[in-house]
Length: 233
Image 1 (spheres, rainbow, N blue to C red):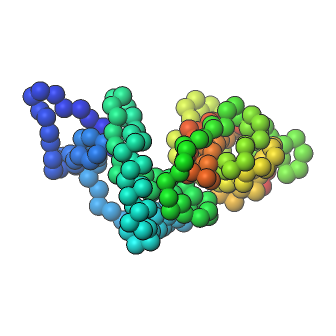
Image 2 (image 1 turned 60 degrees about the horizontal axis):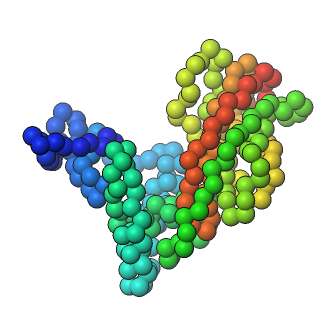
Image 3 (image 1 turned 180 degrees about the vertical axis):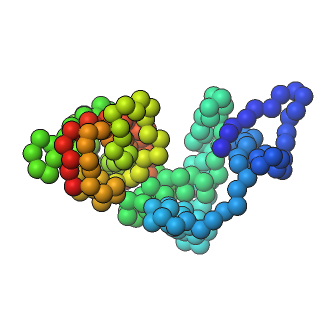
């Protein structure tokens, strides 16, 4: 989805043209590709859609009037900054979905009232190495053990050829690490479960994000590249 800004000549656009849809929301005008929605087939897609549906239904049917008002008030005092540097406001329901979706994905309880803070800590530096002994899989070590309440979500690429320069953009979630789990984290079984036996040589791109279980806030991603010299799986 592309974010756009209009000038003095053209100040608004709506509808579709040449496969593009021009629209507007609280964040401002945007352009998206016109697509015909299809039912997701992959388990991960079903999980994401199920989490979004659950948060939407909960907000509409389970929250009290006071809780809805609390989320609406929270939205008014927590603007976001877009790529142009402009501050935009979400609705209370949008904030409810934004913060609860990661919690549902992790199998945690839905947060019915807005959080008291937006604390989150990024993983910092990541070190990924191949285990020198059996099962020879990748080991990931963040800079320090994540503080209490922070879950780690690990994404990975398939094995990439050594000659590839650019990072693989379509990574998949392979593991969630509970708070307090001491590194290094052995990702062998998780990677093999997703991608199958790993040949060699090559390398795997890893990405780590933290989610705060008390407020639903997600960190920015930290990435690392793991050379693979020995087959595993």
